[in-house]
Picture 1: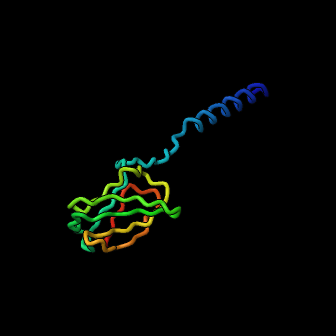
Picture 2: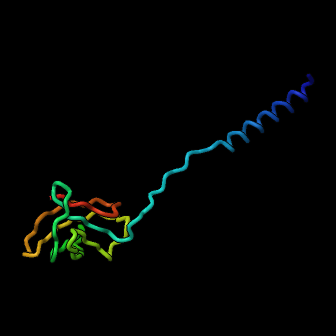
Picture 3: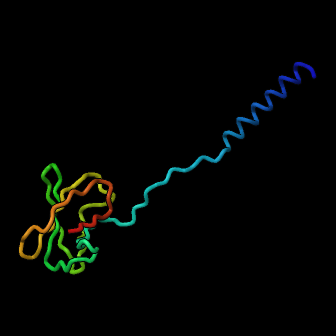
Length: 119
């Protein structure tokens, strides 16, 4: 085999190996798909049974002092219409019952669509 034929063969192999590498399947990164558009809090007992939360309210407080309040429905769900998901900051959650007594205080980390408060 002539020297020029060897160079052509090596060049052809190099091009083919580069094409093979370029066409190799790379794993795609998983994207988090948000389902809920507004932040939701669920109030449940330690057996995961929702409380009857008529006239209860939930407050979220940021470290900056901003306080956001949402009422609970009778099924233990509070929806914060002003907070879109995924949340970008952490909050302190306080749940206050109908007698204006604080039932629990929890830390809610960022990147959440909902939070289950067990107490």
